[in-house]
Length: 155
Image (cartoon, rainbow, N blue to C red):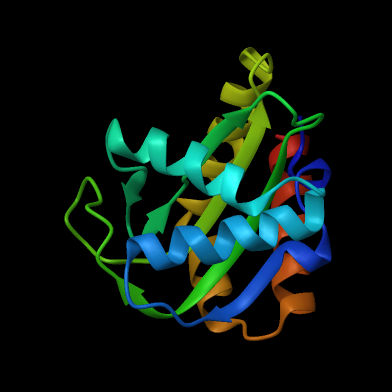
């Protein structure tokens, strides 16, 4: 599983303006619905259910909310760089500004865990995170995600 397989250019939100965690998850779920053909509300419910188990804010301004859906045919993601960081109940207590929403099939098993690990590894890299924070356009952000994905696949 490589990052290039997870995200299409239309799934990149370059400067998302939200006021809180719930609004963020709603916006990203709607975009996930658009790029996948699944119901945005169904995605939101799955992500929110997972978030109730504990925050997916992994620290250093990064969150990786995720969920599983029975009708999902492949693992995919939506990336957002927030205009302003928001409170996300992250492990380190810091606000979040880089978010990768990951959706998988209920039967994805190990592939879902591998995708989560790969996303976490590249987003938590300080150099990659800094580049993502400095970049404004969706195409440029997508290019960075693809470069990071290729680099993590080569490693």
